[in-house]
Length: 173
Image 1 (cartoon, rainbow, N blue to C red):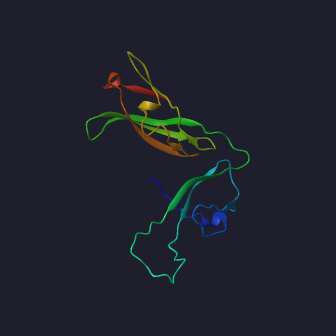
Image 2 (cartoon, rainbow, N blue to C red):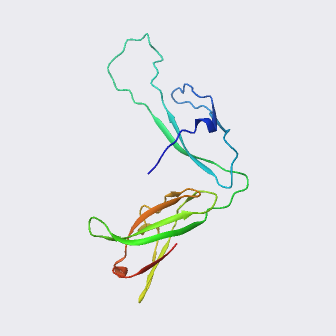
């Protein structure tokens, strides 16, 4: 679950507001003014909302639809000396979902100092008397392409291959 907390006191945004005409661009500078950084990057969600401003208040209003835009992006603040992402399997278990499918619930943990996008990911599954099964990114929906933040854990659910159903399974990342 994504939880956004106000971080307005950690950044200086200049200019804080501006008018952006059609087919034009403006430069907006964002500066870190928060507490000194530790050994891990900090992650933020950058949100810019278009305001409903009437630039021509004396013009007669006609019917129509007004659409306001919202821009969102990731923003990472890194200390100078930071360790790379280190992704580990924290825990895993086999479970049956509401539709009767056997799945693996796997929790990955990033013990490093930087976030990592999980791309071209592979999981190796093994069980007694079963040849190792390597699940590549096309079999890892929900995990492939996700972002694991520094110092955080994230849980994923993956369909269990038929050859491993009913068996004690080991997982390697």
